[in-house]
Length: 362
Image (tube, rainbow, N blue to C red):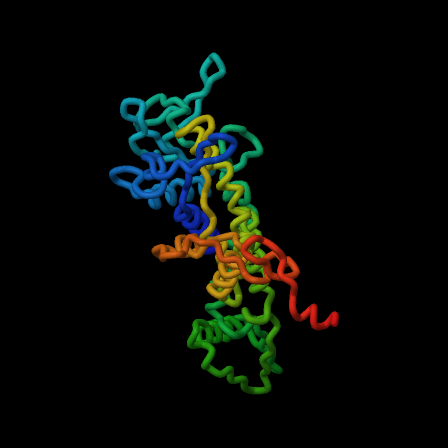
């Protein structure tokens, strides 16, 4: 987490997933029906426990998974009914196997716990099926390269604007004189204020730059590539961690980012759903807030959705967090989307001839 790209990746992914609304659905009569606001969805979206809000708990659980590969939450029940979520430290939980082949969790505080009472979020693993691997440990070589580049950049900034130089003299100097000259140069020209000090060469001496400066060298491109590798480690587009323009993401970039998060939401929603609801239920993360793009793109998309009859004005206002308006539940289809009949009809449905066509035929 000391590397900026790793910290940003963990914070961005866990933060965006934590603020997504979580919805529960039940399969009824060949369709999925929204369960609505029940005790479980309240804990998933509003208050996870008496000590944690839903956002705090989800952000903690997701960040622990991204860092260590696993996170654990105890499902507290009262009289077989859901009560609250209790976060567990990942280092205090183990998964053991019984002699009959079944598994159980061993916790330092609560002892043996059934898998049905633990929400276990895990990263993909190439070794153990029921235990996640830390992406940071798996990509140690990439992180080592990024750390080396950060250290090199820090050292280079101590000698800003100038690479390594060579001082050539016409007279022969002893070892002690060379040492003193090198020490005098590094003392006088290191640090940010060293950029303002001129190099004065006397007695026919000349100064030549033999190394590239921080601006000239490939450090910037190497650091960018290292950041892109870290983005690939966490499975998100590189521009999420490295944006040169600083502008808002386009709708295509936002959709690509939301699609990349499906790797997490699909796996984790299945785990949460199976532990809290069971059969004929599913939990979904609502990624609508990530797909809006810029303000102008969002307004244009909503405008087209209303004109095409896909959404009503009140549905758009609900997504924007605005109150409904009178008449906003009606569908408004643009005139260019109406069916062409070749002319008007009277009240009985009889086609009325087009006067202009009649005039042209005469």
